[in-house]
Image (cartoon, rainbow, N blue to C red; front, side):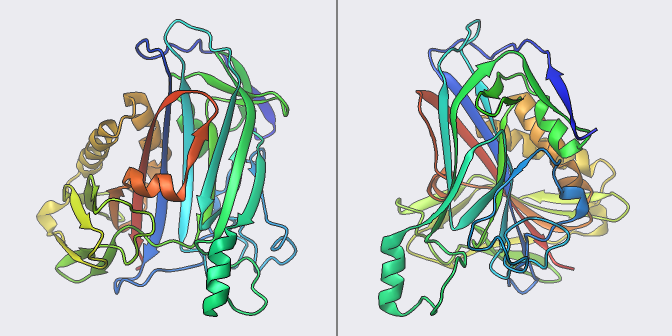
Length: 368
C-alpha cells in the first residue's frame, strides 16, 4: 500500500473569486514538560504510529549523518538528541487559485527554520542547513561556544527547504498510502501541487522538523491548577506586546472521557520575561463529559477559523491530529501561536503575490 500511486481526480472547486492566489498553512509545535516546568528532550524519538510513509523525503545534515546518536531523524529507534526539545509537526501548505481560473504561473516556495532542522518533506525539495555567522561569532567572542562545536541546535542554526517551479493543477498523481496522518490533509478543496523535476504530486506541500526551542508558555502543574507564565526570551518579538489568541487545558482519560477549559486570550509584555500570566483550574469529576471530545474539537475549530483557515482545512487539521490531540491519555495545554513567532522562527516566502494565512497550534504534553 505504501509504494503505489493514487490519482487525485477531484476537480477543485476553489473559494470565492479573488485577484490573488490564496495560500493557507496549518501545523503544530509540540513540547513535553515535567510538572515542575522542566522541558523534556530527545523528542526526535517518536512512537511507531507517528512514522511517515516511505515515500516522504528525509534530510540529515552531513555533520550528523554518520553517528546515529547525533542524528536528527525522527524514529522509534534513535536514542533522541538531548537538544531536541520541540517537534515541528505536519505543517501543510494549500494553494487556492482564483475561482474559475487555471493558474499557470510556476511558484518557488521556501521555508526556513531558525533553531531547528527541517528533515522530512514532500514533494521533493532542495534541503540545506547553514549557520548564522554573526551570531556564531558573537558567541565565540563571549566564549559561549564549546571547543569543537558541531551542529548542536541553537538560534544560530538555520535549516531551509526550497521547492522550485511548483505547478498548481486540478489533477495530479499522488502517492498511494493507508497512513491516516497522510490521508487526512487531502480532504480539502484546494489546487493540487505538482513538482515537475521529481514528477511528484500531492494535494499540499508538507514538511516537518525538530528544534531546540521552548514552548511559548512556561507551565507548572499542581494538584489544583496549571500555572502559566510568559517565555523567558523575546528575540522573535519586535512589538512591545503580543497576544496568544487562545489557550486551553484538556485532560483525556484512558476511557476516552475528556474535560477541558478554554482560558481565552493571553497578553504577554516583552519587557516582562517570565511574567506570571495566571492559572487554569484543574478538573473535578463533574467536568469530565462523554461529549467532551466533541466540545473540545468544536472549540479548537472556532479558533482555527478565526485564524483564517477554511472550514475543510480546520477539519483536516483536527482529523490529522485526532489520535494525539483527543485520544492519547494525559493532561495537555493547547495554544494558538502568534504570527510574530511563526514568521521569525519559520519564515515562509513565495515567488508570486499571495494572501497568506498561517495557523499554528502549540501543544504542551505533561509527562506522567
